[in-house]
Image (cartoon, rainbow, N blue to C red; front, side, top):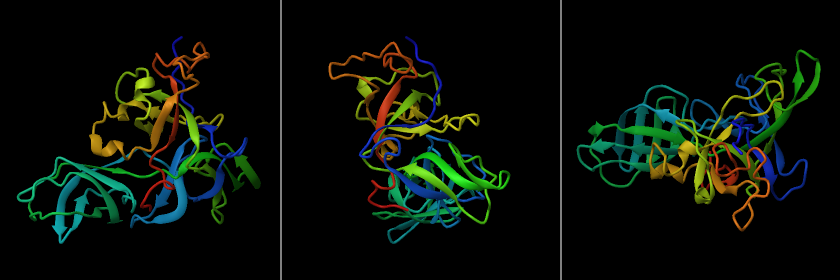
Length: 299
């Protein structure tokens, strides 16, 4: 049967804990954070104007594109300048493509950000490069996710009591106290998620994609039930990647396989929506690939 395009985020599929809490840990959302976070959304560590963590979490974004105007290399330390935007997180990866210097060639690949501001990112490099950047190329930041959001509680200003909610609506909390968030961050956790394509027509993500890394698109959350609209983005698979191979190792999830398949390659539930792995919008099982607890270097 054809699958329905109705993403609802990343749902716990297995892990080292037990239902209903699995590996949930408590984190915090700033009461002043006006961006809604839905049940099943990937989240990241929130950062300030120097790229350092604030102690809070925020809804994740798949990647951050920077418009680079210059890169200066001094004794192995490079500083990229770009149009003002949110400071890239320290510990995130900066992927450069298409750069070129008058001498030294191109400065392309993935680099760990060691310092940043709203207009600069600092990272270490090897080799000798001139000060003349002839081709700024493109730059994309990949931030490790902190986990999957599965609800919160906060002191509601409107209701004058503690409210338990599937999602953080972006307002209504007493600003004198942080919002308590529940997040699954265990490195052994696996998630059931729908596939789709953020760039073009979606097709099935079948057995051939098992073992590949994959990114996500945040989609549109549902305020009626608090569920996420996030999905595994087929456009980020290696064959489709607009950035190149340097970015694929940095994607947040690893595909374990199609949902509910058996070792002989069949699915006894194939007639149920989402289980037909020969049609678009099928559901897959994923595990963390680039997450805060799995990184060698973090924020």
